Image (cartoon, rainbow over all chains, first blue to last red; front, side, top):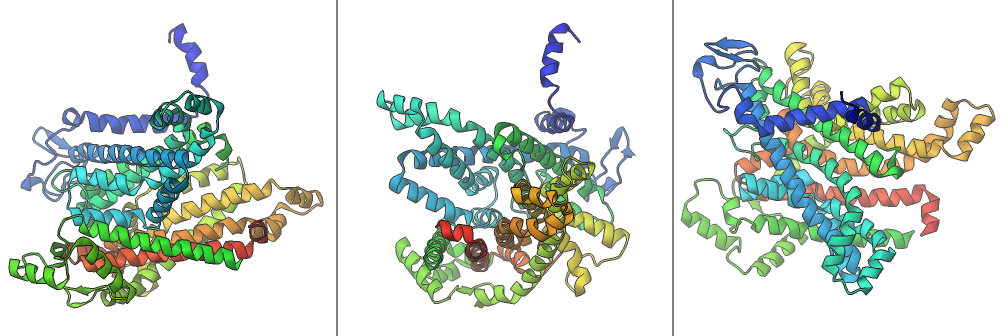
Length: 287
Length: 306
């Protein structure tokens, strides 16, 4: 290790081991999603009726099926690697959608107050009284399946939490002297909100976004498990597990491997989220 | 007190109205809701006739008013697929879901509250870290994964419990655990925070200074005070458990409204799905009003502050 990195290491030595571990897990899963075509041993949709439901470690010709094969003889390892794409892409994009919608509405409500606030915050209350998974199930079922629709449905069901946080934070920030100053200097609402308010409320928003990211992964997996998310034969952890459930008595590996990755991903995101919250929001250190 | 309850009720009515509107909008997102209410492969004539019969050829605001008028008379529409009132179909399945949600709530409270208490009282110890990992696991594990795992271990391998379906308490055990896991984590977290808040107060220090054991201070005084925020969580969790049933009932072939919702989507019987969404949302709203009112009744400080 060079002398330049030693100084840096001491600064980072405060990062607990658990955070390093989950960061590595997350990095592995992100790498799986990004480099799936290079990492996967074979085409995730390639069927081979001769090698159906083979256990992990089964070898046929030059190919070893480390995670076994499914009911159509497809390689479970390749499907799990490609499945990481569905999970991460849907979760990341839907979090992006709900952040943009939720934060914009929250800032607008907190800045303009009055009727705008009543209208937006009432809508938030209403949205929060329909359980998200139900609203998502209904909407996806009405609209029909599809990647873009899935992202939009998840994103547009889960924005109210961001609005609540952005609203509360904007109320606090709006009275700070530098905001008042730029208002007096003639800056428009859009400029003040996006240039000055947004950077100052980003911390709490990030905390919500991390927690929501874990939830979105679970929602995508749940919807795909129910047959309403990513459509077969495209691999998604939820849909692989839905097949695996039917064969759990004879072939536990179909459900076990995607399940393990799904759990590790959500677990890591949650650990990271808790840690971020403790560091960005000292008030909630005990939570 | 009465004024507070009235205000809260008005808010609830607005929320119900809003939920009805959102569900109406979602049902119309596809363009033609008639297509959501007929079995697959219905003839164009049948669709056209039904469209007229159900008023879907009317202007949208007329449809909206008719929809509200129907619901105001508890008319949730006829299921075209099953040729029976949608509400009756849902009601016949509801008891199973209530049974399951009750089982899950027992698991969530029965495990979550003791775990939360232990985490707060054994702060900084090995036990706390172990329990924290347990709580985080419960929160991160998808319900369908824990369901399948339980089936694999206790039904397939050990053969202690039936794999799926209903019948006796044995059948209720695994779905309740799988469904209750996330709520368990929520309870444990809330109880822990609530306990830590209370444990930092002067009366606890005073009790300890007088020679009372930590156990007796906790059980005589802290728990009662710490339980107030937990009531709100309990109420909100009932709604979450009902919604979570959609997935877990599919895993365990449990014949409640969750499984019915998925079956109805598959048979394109959306009136039934609509009733289920409305029913669960109303339960959610009703329990949160109830929780808020109970909260105020239990804690006089909140009552006086208003």
